[in-house]
Length: 224
Image (tube, rainbow, N blue to C red; front, side, top):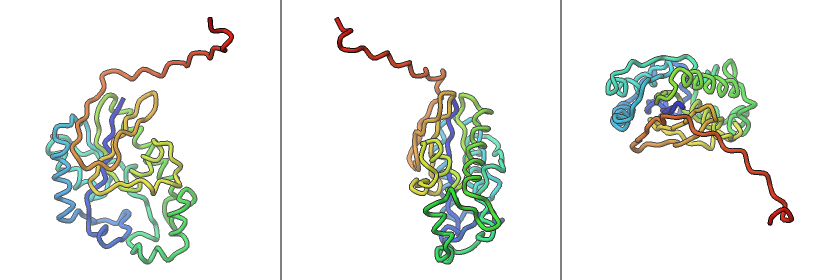
């Protein structure tokens, strides 16, 4: 089993301005976001993390770095953890986008949405799930921190919860929050969502026992 700590990056000015930052370069944590990253590293100080991964964008690197310093680990960058590619919507105000018909599609039918010149939402969900499972395969029986973005974490959680992707917007993932997913050969377990309190985790030493086959039903006339 691998335990994945899915961490959203800390807050930045684009969040406050309610713009879609996407893959814009130069979007850094603001003072509040840096404080969140430092607090996160303290919350996870006693958790036996074996590796730290993040998306290529500055705000995720800056969220991961204080934790890496505390744990004396390098931050490993993975392209597949990167933000949704919003294409022509990148950098635009959400207030303006909300007036467009496609915005309604994002909110009500995300599995049918492709951003103009960018990703489809279904491709994004497949990308993050594949990336997390590749990471998990590299770290059996370990705890791994993964710093990514809100929609990607929500999409992964929806997948592992068995929730239809069109309902993924119901899942809350705040800046610098931690969601915990256990991946094993017997399937996923979502242990925490959007957690901003202390985390105490231990890696199980053995794989969980698969569920037993149910006993055959006995007809009443067969009972002595």
